Every structure is written in C-alpha cells, then in structure tokens.
Length: 330
Ligand SMILES: NCc1ccc(-c2ccco2)nc1
Image 1 (cartoon, rainbow, N blue to C red):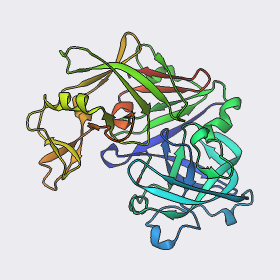
Image 2 (image 1 turned 90 degrees about the horizontal axis):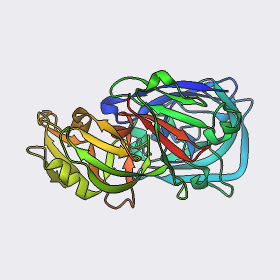
Image 3 (image 1 turned 90 degrees about the vertical axis):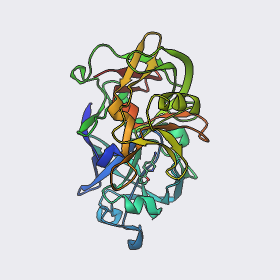
C-alpha cells in the first residue's frame, strides 16, 4: 500500500496541519504530524470544556469500532513546555488513503494552555520511534510503525513548503517532488528520534565551509532550526542590527535586514540550502519592526533540532527499513 496526505502551514509556518479520520463513522480532525515525538493524542470528549477553544474533539463513545485500552494512561511534556495527558482507546485511523484498524488513540483529559490557544490544532501524531511512546503500563506503536509492513517501501517522506501546502507520503518516493539526487545519511534511533549528524555548514553563497559535526533530530513538530550557539552567533554576525534579546527569548533583528542563506551539509558532498527568507520567522512587535530569527540556539536541549525552517527547504525521506534519512533539494 501507499498513501499521500496534504499538510497545510499555519501562520508564519509555525506548524503544519494534516487531516486524519478516526473511528466509525469517521470523525475528521486536523493534527500536527510530529517526527520529534511518538504519541498520537487528540482533543476529545474527555477534554474539559474550559480547555477547548474551537478544536474538534474525538468522541470514542460515538465510534462503533472504539475499544478502551483498559488501565492505560499517558502523559507528555514537550520541549516548548506544553503538555497533555489522558487515557487510551484503540480505533480505526485513516490518513492519506492508508488505514490501520487498531491504532492507539490517546484521548486527552487534560491539555496545557498552549494547546488550548492553538485553536486549529486538534492533536499531535508522533512519527518518531515507539521506544519513546508515553503510554503506560504498555508503550504503543506509532501509526507509521503499524503500517510499515504493509507499505510498498518501509518509509515515509515529508515535503513541507514555505507558505504553501505540501505532503506527507507513505510507502513511496515521488520522483517529481525533488530535484537532483537524494543523499542518504545514517540515523541513530537509540534515543527514539530520527537523529543524524551533519558534517558542517556554510554561511552565505560565497561563504567558506565550516567542518563542525552537528548532531540533531529531524523534527517536523518544531518550528525553528535550533543549532549550537557558536554556529548561531557566527550566522547573526552577518546580519546588521541582530542581537540576542533575552526579553524576546532569542536573536532578533530589523525585519528589513538582509539575511544570508545557510547551507547544511549532508553526507560527504551534498548540502541543503536554506534561503535567507526562511531565516526570519515572525515579527516580535505589532509594528513589524523587529523580527525573531528562524535560527536559534539549542542551549539546554542536549542535541540540535532540524525543525521546519530546515525541513521546508528539503525533500526528506524517513527510511525506517534502512535506518537512514534521505535529503534532497526541491
Ligand atoms: N514538538 C512537539 C510540539 C508540537 C506542537 C506543540 C504546540 C502546539 C501548540 C502548543 O504547543 N508543542 C510541541
């Protein structure tokens, strides 16, 4: 089998939302596919009304195929401080024309304020490795892991775009979705992530390559590109008026500043070009005078995060069959 589903950016490409259908009859929700986590959770009939602000809620009591996973609970906290928790049902899940009949659907009985405020987002679908799933007493497998053996190829691809809809595809590689060739690089999944190491980077079209291994995760659920502070400092030295502003929580610069492109190396002789435009995330003030950088530090995390600012510049193959990541220009 193969599947393909559209994914649509929200304002400033802060996150990408993807349609999913749960249960019988189908209940349609819009979720955030997150390759940086491994839980599929949704707003539900169990989410307190005070914590719901327009989101679509999955109601297992209205699904003839829903089965409660007795005794199972879950709780999760994300890197941005947001969190959610609840209990678990098994039900049919369809996305992009592929379906799995007994997918663990983690229903939220509590969500943090950040999720309540994110009014178009009905939940998260984690597509990292099941080893870091948060359901207890027994961990659950991801939607992709459940599909894997029935897919034509044991892989999925992400084609996120800047300010336009893109696609997640399952089980095949769309040759029309990228240019040139795909460069593959090993994935280390021991921490449960799609973790890989870039050999280095280049700042600007005429910049010199800096050999500097950067270990990080391919994370569709993180908006920005989070790299070591030495790299980030070197980049913003090239941006006039840029400074680290603790009040804004990171590097800020005049929105009319010229931003150099940033090249992330892959394998022995390939690199992904992030256009300067992608290196500005959003205005920090209502006048739109100063802008928050799309590149920020990975301080305190323990590894770098190749989030949407990077991923939307590439065609990305998440190849579980060969434990590798494929990257191509587009
Ligand atoms: N990297 C996982 C992830 C995704 C989305 C969110 C989120 C959305 C609204 C508030 O917080 N948080 C963490």
